[in-house]
Image (cartoon, rainbow, N blue to C red; front, side, top):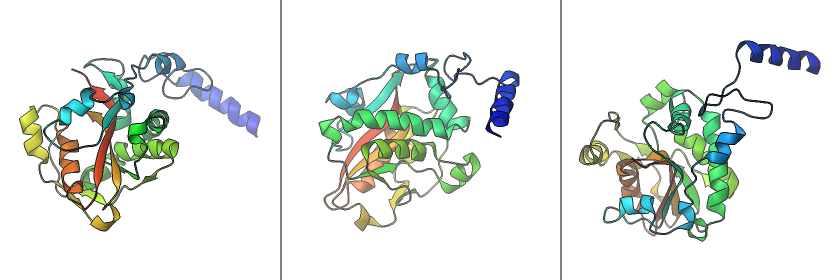
Length: 233
């Protein structure tokens, strides 16, 4: 039976070969979604080991976070932008989990993130999540949580209203678009906790700022931020 399954899988792969989502080359055995060469070439930032990094600077003077980091950076049109695009729009949520695991190992080695109590993904509005079928930030958070051995809470922070896409908005328009749109169902669960907010990519930081605002109103709560990617445009 196993031989038959392997033969069928090989036949399907001949007809529909699996390709690396970043470079487009055919994947070989043991590779999934991304080839080993692209993983090794991933432009990792090491921001989690550097205070005052570019992600932290986005929030200076805007919201009082503990620390912030992104796993890798990309420029518009970069092949690694396809990694984020694949997780977000091509239903490769499992790739988000795997990438999150890799990021989580880096965060585990950082003293700045060692005091995190709970991991919280940026929520989608229920209508948008139903349409997409999943929240990509939740899958990234689960991967990070597994590597850091931290609990993930994906239902306490919620999006009150649905907003329009941020893609073509200016920094100020992005902030206006998300101001006051997040709420907390059970504040006592987050009070006194160091919360690690997770998103797929940070550009201007407006959405993450809007998430952090109600969390920081809770007694004793602290917030740090981690995103899979940093759009270094």
